[in-house]
Length: 86
Image (cartoon, rainbow, N blue to C red; front, side, top):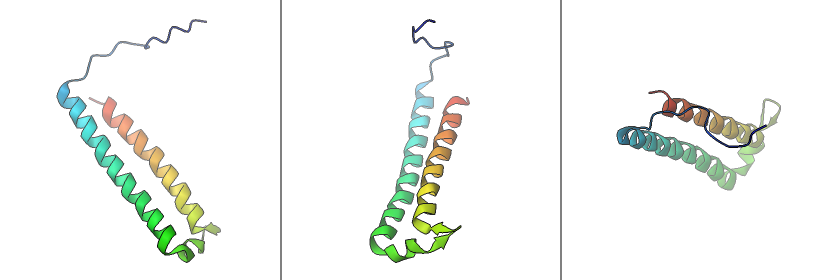
């Protein structure tokens, strides 16, 4: 076994425009997710009783929490796909 930590294949370096586009996309996705998370925190802080309502048999807080986790994974996959498809 070799542990040389080399890339599998050498890819062409990205252009500056591509890097800037990827950075803009990443910032947009970050702001989108942060706004969703802020909404969840605001509901938790100011309307806690609404998170106790059962949704799919569990409290809405649990459902929303898992939704946030799943949403983060989906956004990460979308970002990775967008940044590697040129």
